Length: 119
Image (cartoon, rainbow, N blue to C red):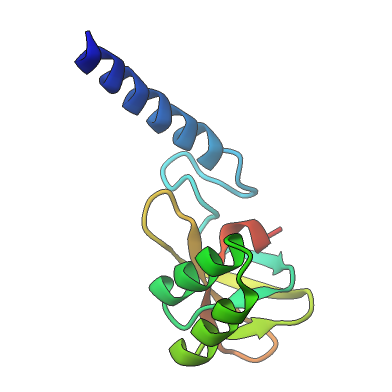
């Protein structure tokens, strides 16, 4: 009985993640993320030098610890996008595509951003 409850819980989480992924602007059924190559606008956000760096910084922001988030930004060579600007989607991070690699069209730089920053 307990095992069935665990399996049903896991199945429920997977379904929720799949539904949430399909709500991303420009999402395709295969990727559950924005289409690679698509030009989109990005809101001010952190810009991780790697997917892991982006996730680390965002975790500290989610915990409300801006001091540690700033420390992680500096330590990982990441930065902050301070104003809305166009980007090109280059790659999707690990499932459930929490982060997305983009090219900043104004500067030509690349970085990893949280998908919620994309519009």
